Length: 84
Image (cartoon, rainbow, N blue to C red; front, side, top):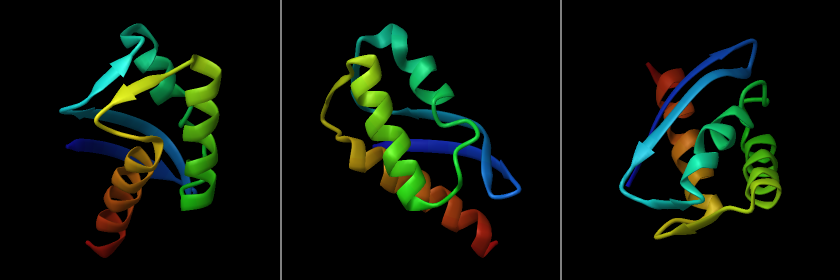
Protein backbone atom coordinates (compact mmCIF):
# COMPACT_ATOMS: atom_id res chain seq x y z
CA UNK A 1 0.00 0.00 0.00
CA UNK A 2 1.22 3.47 -0.93
CA UNK A 3 -0.23 6.65 0.58
CA UNK A 4 0.44 10.00 -1.02
CA UNK A 5 -0.14 13.54 0.17
CA UNK A 6 0.46 16.09 -2.54
CA UNK A 7 0.04 19.82 -2.99
CA UNK A 8 0.00 21.25 -6.47
CA UNK A 9 0.02 24.76 -7.81
CA UNK A 10 -0.15 25.86 -11.44
CA UNK A 11 -0.38 22.18 -12.44
CA UNK A 12 2.98 21.36 -10.83
CA UNK A 13 3.77 19.33 -7.72
CA UNK A 14 4.75 21.73 -4.94
CA UNK A 15 5.01 19.28 -2.03
CA UNK A 16 4.73 15.53 -1.79
CA UNK A 17 4.90 12.98 1.02
CA UNK A 18 4.86 9.27 0.25
CA UNK A 19 4.35 6.66 2.95
CA UNK A 20 3.12 3.11 3.06
CA UNK A 21 3.87 -0.55 3.46
CA UNK A 22 6.80 -1.12 1.12
CA UNK A 23 10.57 -1.55 1.19
CA UNK A 24 12.75 1.03 -0.53
CA UNK A 25 16.53 0.66 -0.78
CA UNK A 26 18.71 2.45 -0.09
CA UNK A 27 16.42 3.91 2.55
CA UNK A 28 18.48 7.07 2.95
CA UNK A 29 17.70 8.26 -0.60
CA UNK A 30 13.93 8.26 -0.09
CA UNK A 31 13.83 12.02 0.69
CA UNK A 32 15.71 12.60 -2.58
CA UNK A 33 13.17 10.43 -4.39
CA UNK A 34 10.34 12.63 -3.11
CA UNK A 35 12.35 15.78 -3.90
CA UNK A 36 12.77 14.59 -7.50
CA UNK A 37 9.01 15.00 -7.92
CA UNK A 38 8.89 18.64 -6.79
CA UNK A 39 8.19 20.93 -9.71
CA UNK A 40 7.10 18.09 -11.98
CA UNK A 41 4.03 18.72 -14.11
CA UNK A 42 1.01 17.07 -12.49
CA UNK A 43 0.27 14.70 -15.36
CA UNK A 44 0.85 10.99 -15.68
CA UNK A 45 3.53 11.06 -18.36
CA UNK A 46 5.68 13.66 -16.59
CA UNK A 47 5.32 11.87 -13.25
CA UNK A 48 6.21 8.51 -14.83
CA UNK A 49 9.34 10.02 -16.38
CA UNK A 50 10.38 11.64 -13.08
CA UNK A 51 9.83 8.44 -11.07
CA UNK A 52 11.74 6.30 -13.57
CA UNK A 53 14.60 8.81 -13.73
CA UNK A 54 14.81 8.97 -9.93
CA UNK A 55 14.92 5.16 -9.72
CA UNK A 56 17.86 5.10 -12.14
CA UNK A 57 19.70 8.12 -10.78
CA UNK A 58 19.40 7.07 -7.13
CA UNK A 59 19.93 3.35 -7.74
CA UNK A 60 16.63 2.46 -6.11
CA UNK A 61 15.48 -1.09 -5.49
CA UNK A 62 11.98 -1.48 -4.11
CA UNK A 63 10.45 -4.67 -2.83
CA UNK A 64 6.72 -5.18 -3.19
CA UNK A 65 6.23 -2.09 -5.38
CA UNK A 66 7.39 -0.92 -8.77
CA UNK A 67 7.79 2.57 -10.22
CA UNK A 68 4.37 2.28 -11.86
CA UNK A 69 2.80 1.74 -8.42
CA UNK A 70 4.15 5.10 -7.23
CA UNK A 71 2.87 6.75 -10.40
CA UNK A 72 -0.58 5.20 -9.93
CA UNK A 73 -0.78 6.30 -6.27
CA UNK A 74 0.26 9.86 -7.11
CA UNK A 75 -2.23 10.07 -9.97
CA UNK A 76 -5.03 8.66 -7.81
CA UNK A 77 -4.35 11.33 -5.21
CA UNK A 78 -4.24 14.10 -7.81
CA UNK A 79 -7.48 12.91 -9.43
CA UNK A 80 -9.15 12.66 -6.04
CA UNK A 81 -8.25 16.27 -5.32
CA UNK A 82 -9.68 17.50 -8.61
CA UNK A 83 -12.94 15.59 -8.02
CA UNK A 84 -13.54 17.31 -4.69
